[in-house]
Length: 326
Image (cartoon, rainbow, N blue to C red; front, side):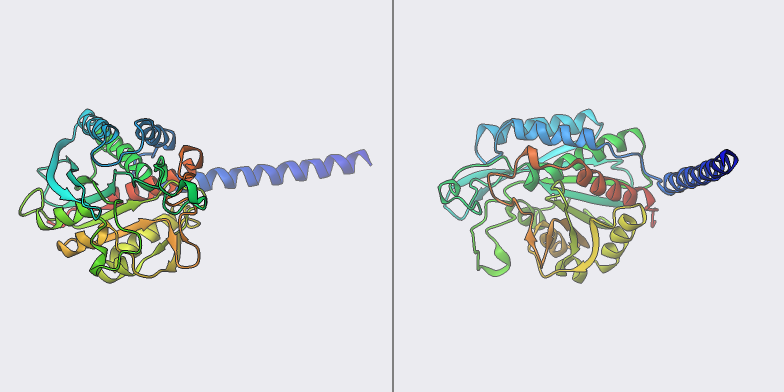
C-alpha cells in the first residue's frame, strides 16, 4: 500500500512539474512576443493620482493651470520637445477661456510618426450622478481624463529609455469635456474644443502621422473597449491592428471584438484633419459609457491598475512593432 501511495505521489509530482514547465514556457513565449518595454501600471497609477491631487482640472481654474505646468515639466523631464498650443475659446455657457493643447514629441527628425492623444481637462459638473443634489458639483475625473494622460506619461517615460523605430507625438487635448448635455448640434461641436481647434490649426502646418490613437476612460475596472463606428469608418486597418495585438498579448477581455455605434470624440476631429484615427474608449452599445462616467464616483478608488496595464502595454506594443514606411 505504501508503495502504491509513493507511486501516485511520484506521478502527481511529475504532472505538476510538467505543468510548471509548460507555464514557464508559455510565459517565455509571451515575453518573446513583446518587442515593447514593460508598461509599469504602478507608475501610471501614480501619474493618475498626481493629477487628481491638483483638484478638478476645470478650464480657467488654478488646478487647471497647475496641472498644465506639471504635465509640461513631466514631458520635458522625459526628454520630449514640448510646445503648448494656446488659443482663445468659448464654451457653450458663454464663458471665455484660453485652451492649452500640450504637445510632446520624441525623435522629431523621424518622418514616419505615430500620434497618441488624450484629454487632460475635467468636466465642471457631475451631471450624470444619480443624486440630484450632486449634479452641479465638481468631481475628480480620475478615469475620464486623468487615466488617459497617465498612460501617455508612462509611455513617454518608456520611450525615453528605448526609442521605437518611428517618431512619436503625444497631444493632450484641452476643453474636451465641457460640452452641452444632449448636444444636438452637428457633430456635437460644444465638445472636443481643443481637438477641433487643432484640426484647423495644426501645431505644424505640414504635420502628418501614419495614424493616431485617442485614449479616453482607460482606467476603470472591468473595462471593455468596443470598435466604434467612426474608428471603423476612417481607420479600419488600425482598429484591426490594435485589437489583434491586444488579444495576442493577453488582453482580449478588454479589447473585445464587438462593434459599437458612432461616438464623436477627439478622434473624429483628427480624422477630419486627414489623420486616420481610432478611439480606445470604455463604451459599448449594451452598457454605455464607464459606469461612473460624469459622477462623483469617478475617483481614484475606482481606478484599476489592470486596465491601465492592458491599454498601456497594447498601445506600446503597437508603437514598437511599427516600421518606417519611408
